[in-house]
Length: 144
Image 1 (cartoon, rainbow, N blue to C red):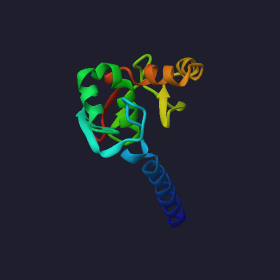
Image 2 (cartoon, rainbow, N blue to C red):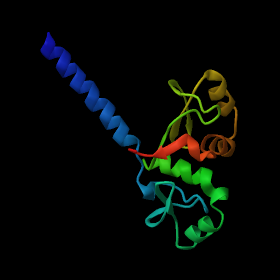
Image 3 (tube, rainbow, N blue to C red):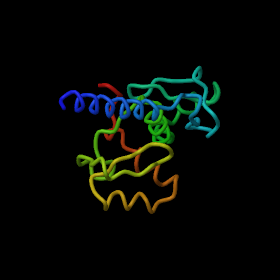
Image 4 (cartoon, one colour):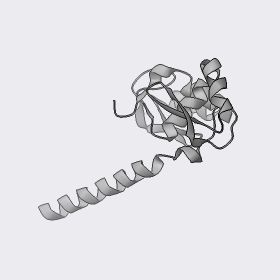
């Protein structure tokens, strides 16, 4: 009986682990936060403890000139690539619940309650990105 429980636990762990790995996106499969075009791994800059990827050599310059303008899209991209992780609800800054999530441009964003989740679900895609990724203190560098 104990052996079956251990085997079942290991199988669940493998499935969960493989799902987490599958959620991380390659830089080349993301969009440049400046232009919206496909990013290149070779075109990147350090930002908030991770890397942001761009489509060309000109976009990092535009990003550096006005980081605040592009920060929400940069954080969204960094969540996709596994550079950042969420630390609390982006609306209230309270602890989030795993069952209160919304997919925002490929990122599963968690909220503290159904009210916050519902607010975001009613927004346009651009409004969702701004609401969910505008505040730097809602995230930390992955693994730190």
